[in-house]
Image: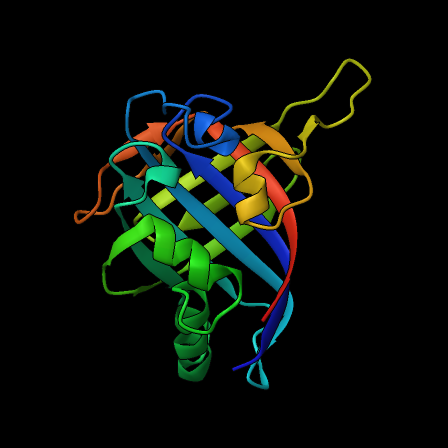
Length: 200
């Protein structure tokens, strides 16, 4: 049950920039509850020897309070272009069934899993970063920059530790929306962009 992945993690949620949940369990989300989507763009990876490089997946979840308080409901969306074997293995990893960081993390914050869905996941880069997930959601992230044009980054937050993220770029995601009939519908303006190097 060995796996490894490198790539990009793109998170956006129902709060204004930046979501208080990143800072720890004592912080309250803007609306008292938090809904979020996390896109995993896998550049290179293998799960029990199966190549998953080039695959995309998205986790959408809702929590009644702060992320760290758990009791969340979640669904995985796997890109429609992946094979059946890849989909099976990706579901197992991201739901925490294959060990590694997701086993403890998802076990702590997700109480209910909805059946995974297949959806066309597109990630496009330019001055902004755009994501679409079938008919369920879309986001456009515009990274914040300082006066010299450098991207604003944050390190050392509690939630970054949970995701093993050394540094994240902060972004506005104004216009982001999520609409799954079995999850809370929401829009928001908080976004973060990470790189990852995970293994189990």
